[in-house]
Amino acid sequence: MKRDDAAPFAPPFAMTGGHVRRDGREVLAGVDLRVDAGDVVAILGPNGAGKSTLVKALLGLVPLAAGRTEIYGDPPARFRDWKRIGYVPQRLPMGGGVPATVREVVASGRVARRSRWRPASAADRAAVDDALAAVGLSGRARDTAHLLSGGQQQRVLIARALAGEPDAFVLDEPTAGVDAGSQEALAATLGTLTGAGRTVVLVAHELGPMAPLVTRTVELAHGRVVRDTAPLGRPA
Ligand SMILES: Nc1ncnc2c1ncn2[C@@H]1O[C@H](COP(=O)(O)OP(=O)(O)OP(=O)(O)O)[C@@H](O)[C@H]1O
Image (tube, protein in one colour):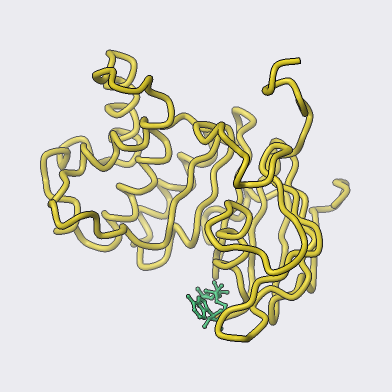
């Protein structure tokens, strides 16, 4: 059997009894969370509740002290199909001291899709163009990404995830510090993706214009899920 066929119906994310400790403190304290394909899940909760830690743990970016988590049926360390995942972190990471252009950062979202050592194909370039257009940054492609405003950098990160054409998006506070117009634009982009059946996990303080897209809210407090709700008529 081919490796890819091992768990064809495995959900995008499934955590069971997830614990994370940092500086001797329990930051996630036994989280069970299954995200099914097509879910649009908002992770809510006060500052320090563990929202960012939860999404990083779902992606294997922080290790679990106990419990287990799987991405499409594999533990993060064994998961290989990263082109299926688009992660939008809170901030643009400073890379290697080289000032990357907006286009270069967005194009890096294609890496998991490209064959190694191959130059960018026409499809790669078109995906980058489309992603830049979707976030309204086509005219800024040659600018240095780190010199843009916080809200524009956030849009660069969203475009990077879009360029990879993933099945599941994980967005960590994509609207923090973003003006109302950009929030509306992001909601419209997410609406297109969710309409096409993509899975979205979204960390947010306030949902704002994204609220109508959300199919489920998971509320965290002190590293625990304290509420997990779906709108009326939908099972949680
Ligand atoms: N690298 C780290 N080292 C030590 N403690 C950390 C680290 N990252 C997070 N923490 C702690 O873990 C707790 C949860 O942090 P986390 O960022 O996951 O919360 P959050 O709900 O996303 O908060 P916010 O809304 O402020 O982003 C906080 O008390 C935080 O101080």
